[in-house]
Length: 233
Image (cartoon, rainbow, N blue to C red; front, side):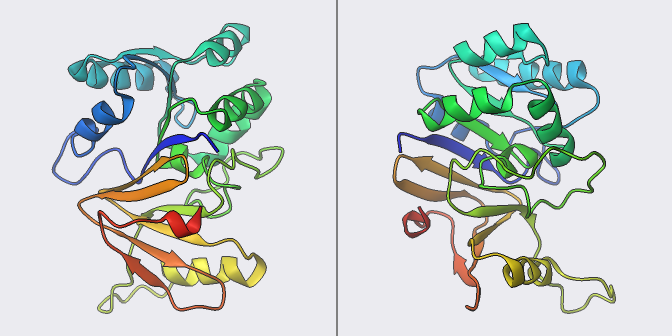
């Protein structure tokens, strides 16, 4: 598959500004591409979100156009040189893309090799479904089917169990194990500060922290930054 993906766990690290930790990686990933379309639908304030992305990416010489949920947006999606989908609520993001007739356009472009960047909710959309999102289902999409640009699920913002915590709710690891009670698909728990870069049949972890790989019926496996995830493709 001629895919080019940069899948980011989070857009802001503690103590840093928007995209500070990954801006140089975005620059290198885009290469000569200096224009992209930003998908703002995971947040309510679409205009403000688009302006924020445009201001930040201007620092690396990238021109940003914000996608709209109308015919003009569909034309823009068909012609985009690259797409960046920001974080927020994954259910709202997916429903908006479905309702606006944008989902299949973007999916087809991504699967054909258009560079795709996602952060948090945008990263969730690269997986087969959104079933491993952390978000509250504030709206109801037509289905949970996502782009399927990678054959594994992703859990952004993955948090390791805290042995000293008095919280009685499920840990992230327990919730992923619950997912595997009903599903076979592997899950990549992508810690904050980490990202996954996919070029064709090669996948590499980047960033300051690694990931935890979950497979049904198996013990979780650690992968460090710089390691390959080719075996999951």
